[in-house]
Image (spheres, each protein chain N blue to C red):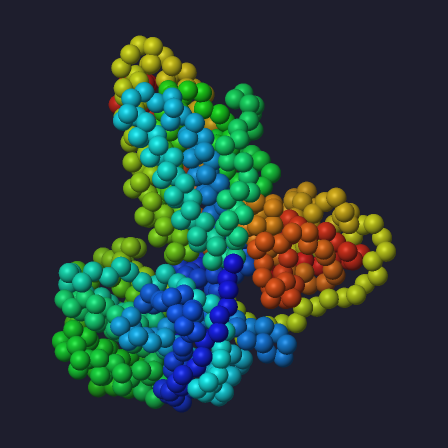
Length: 357
Length: 250
């Protein structure tokens, strides 16, 4: 089960107007747990108005920097990123889980590879970690970074990238693509689309020469780039993606619980799955909510039926249930109304549950 | 530039990369898919363990033991991904009796049994060495087709695990074919192999699921499926026919 550990903020740099780079230090006894692989992320948690929010931010340090650093860009309406941009200072203690993520490839100091990195906005953070690590650990390898931003002022790590180009002369190329600002060469203005990718492969990069590509950015950009890479001969094993946790809402919503009278022996359950809602009566004991849904011909997801695997997770929107066993959901998920339906028995006379949220 | 729903992104072939960015229904289907694989591998490993002592000669013993070991290893690799979704792996490993089998002539079709998500074929008992080898050849070829399909899933960390284990699983099927070629060299062995083929072939075929499955459409929109059950069954049938022709078993 995931475990949160304290990290002390030791430095905060305002990198652009709305992004901070935060250096963190684990307690000595936790140092080994925070040893990371380039491209991994940290998940932080913090309570806002009594409600726990979790946010993941990629580590932007290379393996050889001896530091743990994350970049946090402020998102409009984002509770955590806004708070972090305005309030973090040396001495603040944050809570984070040990590094996770699979956005990396094994290093080999004997080979000379050509890496291609694509980053959109704050998608630069994991790519920067990979890029720095590759340049220092694989002396024969090269890295070409295509970096898309709205405008010059919003480019994170601009100076650091310039410094890296000087340090690793000839091994790092950076191509800035700016959406809202014209540049001398057309290729570098606008969005990264199929046409730009074709031009990139005609004038700047020989696709046959590319060993691995890393992409981190907004969804449409990732799709466009991946399609173009495949069109130019790269296969699935050569393309690595990292998608931000954009599926999470900006603010955790309070769970709606109606305190209905719970007198009867049966419950009116209303269950939503794949956008369709079905209502049925079920007993308050003897049959789990999952089994009731299944016996009403709903194709509800499940696997172990023992409260361990969490495949059958759903959210209670109204009413109350009792969960007999829970070895999978964490406290904060339970507080938000999530339940393991294989272990759930209704307590209230009505129940509204969704597998879609 | 960012106005794209996760559903649209997936429908266009997008990849997801961490538990933090999967939608609720995707999460359920992904976990179901992983549980089915883990349960099948654990049941296969447990079932095959008993046949090690039936193996004739050291090479066969090593082959059987290796299959037992590697299938458990593959289960563990996928379980590690499930752990990132909150699954309690230590408990999961003991949640069902993986070595348990039903009566050899019970007919459960393609039905899962309770919360045990192993493919139905892994509920049937093996009867001795020849039977185990034949089952391994047929199911090994099926696993090849199924793992190739799963190597395309839109959850990138899982696709990577499947791509890594595909050649090892393919080797298990090859070991089976090597074993079977020794078995059919004698008339007695040939007969026994034919009897086992008749028993296992329909049971392995059932593992490809229903024709015209209505779940396929939904899973395919999520990038969790790419080939229909029918197409996969046809691919397996062709592979089996070719393999059996090589061994003059057709």
